[in-house]
Length: 353
Ligand code: CA
Image 1: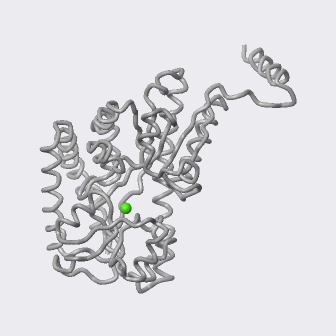
Image 2: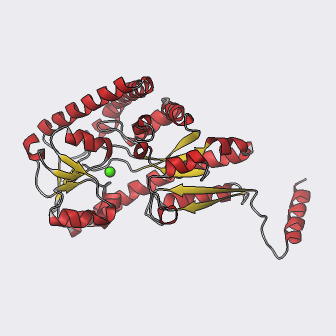
Image 3: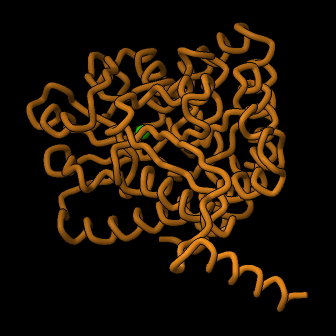
């Protein structure tokens, strides 16, 4: 049987002429949020397209458009919803203006770590809740890769009290920015290309970006030497968006390739990002010994926690679905954290200096 199949394939290629491969049976278009070739966030999407081609033996091809091409970094939700693109990759929390219930599926201040949140998505009902939100828009989603712990940001001056945050101008978008505003800081959003200059000139006093994986290439440590530990984005998860009608129209094997390639790509992206953070950080401590890693005083953390809690309370009151999502996250966090504390945390406490 096998020999016959191989012969047929050889004949097929011969008929197509000169070693040409079969034309793809399924041609899909994908749009992502990032500039072309943007490390990790963007390159992982190129890896996704290559993996889908490999796993489907060339029967599925994906044309990847970066924001250089489609010109709309935060248009991914609408692109996929409308069917203009079949697939998208972005972060869910960028679309709070389209549907506020999308806010919860990237990361939450004081929320789960990457290991905890990934378990919530796949084993704790998180992905089902995400798809309940996105189904209303004709979209199916899959996790797309995690940055791991994001640092609290680069500060020009030390923060010793809540008063030090009053009037502090900081680039910190999204829900974390709202939490900061709640304690008197002034959150702003500035395009990535202007961030270094804004920090250097004192237009802003502080900023958060990602972590060592992507921060150090931006040079922030040269002008703001205080690097604070994380609290607002403990596990930022990117996301793949599929036009649900298009996905359902494909053969079952193709749907399986697209979903499972997303899962493997997310795993690879998370691993590569962890490695990039470790590698970059191992270099900075030699190159910039003046950089100081800091933790906010407990007074500051308590104020941020209180601000966060009142914002979450408003979300719970806003919609029945938001209330269910928050309840699911809080219940899973409580269960998972008890294990993290006796596992990873006690291990680190007992073996670290
Ligand atoms: Ca960030």
